Image 1 (tube, rainbow, N blue to C red):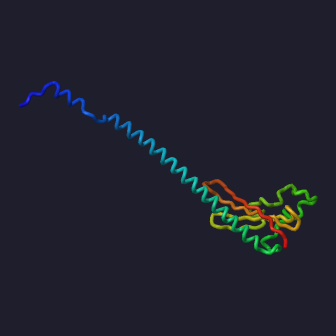
Image 2 (image 1 turned 30 degrees about the vertical axis):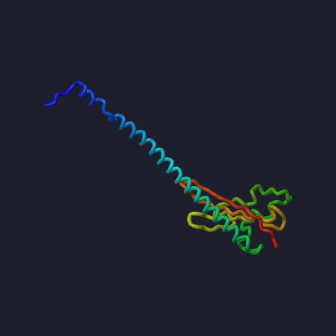
Image 3 (image 1 turned 90 degrees about the horizontal axis):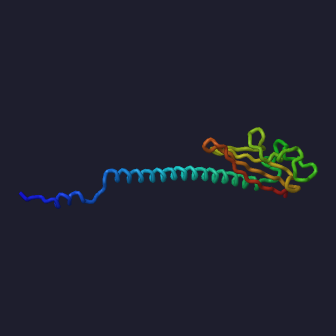
Length: 163
């Protein structure tokens, strides 16, 4: 049987490798990094969903403005139904003398001049006569929806001249 010298025994203690503690620390650092990336991914998904909602609402608003632009000036969808945007600027200074905003910002079934529902979006439009200039109708289209419990809105304002 060969005889083991002291030099042979020491050689076994110098072997290269990782200790269990080093492996645990490396896995912990990797886990923290992966959790940070996952958190950023969740934030990105929420941001994209919010941007999609704004884009879709803007598209509905633009669609409604385009529909209203081709209607005759005296069409029923271009009438100030509740009169809060008609003859409200008696002195012609561009300020609603009745203390409001010519009814252009109304966003309820009872106050808006017109409305239609498109999926989760509600499209309101309000009409004000001769606000920006004589013989014109100012149309404000407002799209509202709820996103994660928060009420959101997009609006587009346009002026339609009489012809």
